[in-house]
Image (tube, rainbow, N blue to C red; front, side, top):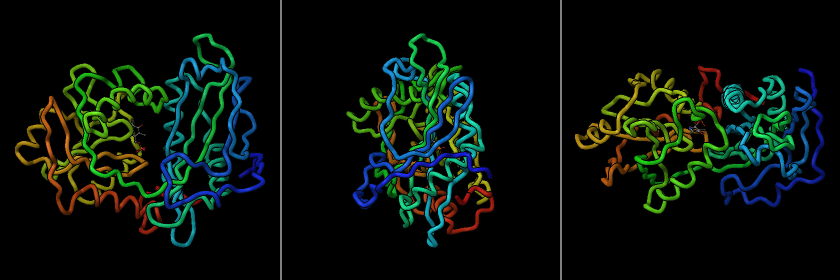
Length: 351
Ligand SMILES: *Cc1c(COP(=O)(O)O)cnc(C)c1O
């Protein structure tokens, strides 16, 4: 591999100021970042620099039109202090899919992989050892061109920043099923990790929070009859012993954790049914006792068991059970991510 990345190291490390036992998610960042500019129709020389604020013109288009996409992924340290990434090419493919929808130029895969690995290697000490600890990695692209015409920018910045994360226990997650607001629509940007998708959820989610629900499970915008996904997680339902999840579509994000769970479930002999699922079916399954589990899946928490859902003012509790699917999937995925088990899929990649 040709080393085309210019690296400027930080003079001192901030790592000794960090209390790794009391991290709040996404507030502390490692010593370096990856930066690559797009101008004159092409991506320029990639660099790794000390982590620092950006200077942008107030007219930069990202501030006005939200031309921005991002990714979320993690690095893990095994017991021999080797550092591993999980399906990193999938994140690059997805950010390019998101970018295309937002009229942002695609980023080259080889530069991404080389930059990502060089950055994580340089900040390796920030990947804390211990099962559950990880380095959360946030690649993102913003439109930097100073110009406020409502059209795609001619200049962008692709960055990767890293934040140490502790094992994340989401606690008792209660969700509200959306009846009024929508996250995405047919022909829209729901499948993209577009920055604006998240801003648009803050208000309805804060209303749900006030009612005691941590998350919203979004439904289709037309009828609010079909279950789609949560704000940053895909959702699975266990009905009797079958795992059911909605098919991905232009409205639903194609989660890497989701597809990994589907694969693991199938290979563990668990029946998987990827099909549209109605809220009425979920309510019925809850009433007749066939609904055994509901959980979200995503990079941050891997799986988040959901203990209750509310629909049309009624609260449905999901009884806790032993041998639940969500713990099986979580353990199998973590074992692959932390190099504690075989990885028959080739998902794990050393840096
Ligand atoms: C990121 C995200 C997910 C989860 O994707 P992973 O690749 O599993 O982390 C699910 N839904 C939405 C809306 C997301 O933004």
